[in-house]
Length: 115
Length: 111
Image (cartoon, rainbow over all chains, first blue to last red; front, side):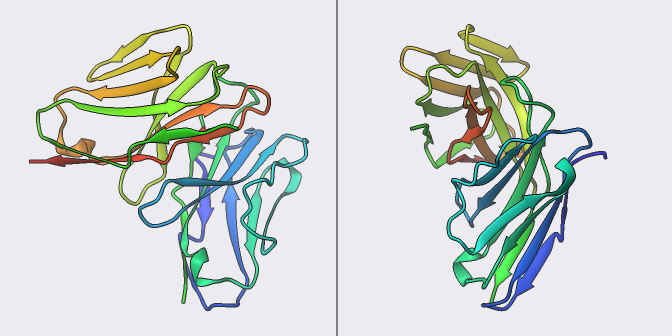
């Protein structure tokens, strides 16, 4: 595709509900990242997928958070039993290969608001 | 562990130079990056520097790298209001190729 696509762009949910955030990376990109950016804050790493390797889940803040990447392409980040502190912009990025040189391309993000 | 640090805010007047600083911990990083995030948008690569270079210049942007001190800086000459954004420095873990981003520096340009 032309770029990294995330959906929805905005999501308002009630506390306690589950949400799914979707990321469509650039076609052929083997690496995919999820980050969280709270209001006025920097990027918080959540999870990293690289090809067929086991994902690096070291940034997931709790067991309410999970992510999967099907067929090495689309990824879904799921947050169960959402809490108000989960409100943030969730950013997805992809890059073309496992190397030090390659650029990461970011989506526009999903703004999640838990009320 | 890996850590990339930046100051949180910088305010400059239009036409002045801006200098955004970054320190990193992984001395084996081969490439170091600067990304820009405009309001309501994702991050975009601004520039990068290869670790065997001390300086890289690209139009109004100058990147300086001090490997001994693990210090990276981004200088924007003749700063414009359109430069107002959050600037992130980043390195890549050489084993996993995972990006490590700094906290971001919010640059505000005053007219």
